[in-house]
Image 1 (cartoon, rainbow, N blue to C red):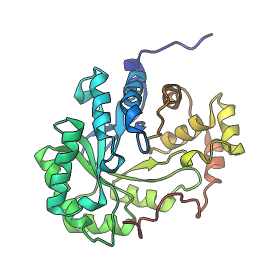
Image 2 (image 1 turned 135 degrees about the vertical axis):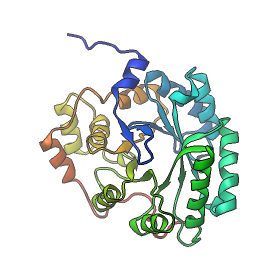
Image 3 (image 1 turned 180 degrees about the horizontal axis):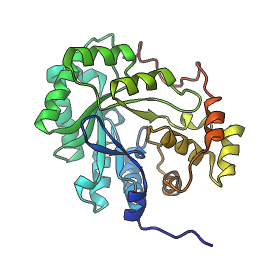
Length: 286
């Protein structure tokens, strides 16, 4: 029997969401636009929203915030229906600089607010992330962002900002994929009440041909990418796979009609590698 085709709005309501520590609700699956060329970003965002996505993740350093805003407007959706995340870059750290940085991002997006504003990296060598975090608290209180969080923060960075301000980030967006599963950091997030969001959730494509991932996908009639996205969802993670190809964007969203079983999860867990990090080390970068 052919599978029933759902409207984009119906598909949007299929997916799970995460309730953040501030009570706001964030879609668990979103579109990432890191390294998305500006000339195709608006089209990719529009294609994602047409399929049923309701969350888009960008950053000042990606140089495509304007195109993200263009894609959201082109979708015809009400602004309140789309969860938009952007991030403050390292050179804009510091209290006053952070206040200016979000205004610049909002101007590029042509939006009055973002749903989630993140400190992109702790950049410990600059030692400005605590003052930056205090600025984000103000920005949230003023309504320029609905929620606030961080990206690439390690446990010492999290404990410092929470200890100094009493305010835990809603989200920590970190490198996380089957080859680099960050179990210790995820456990700390659970203890601190911070939601975990995965960037490079497919290991930047390195795992798409892994035989174990392919086997798990085939078992469910799915691709390796779909199996990995489902793995993130089943672990309760927020996940933002990137693509600019409409067919692939749609395929990445077609993950709500199956779940991995206990054997699948155990086999995925066995892929973890302490040396599996692809991106920079947050303790050193910035």
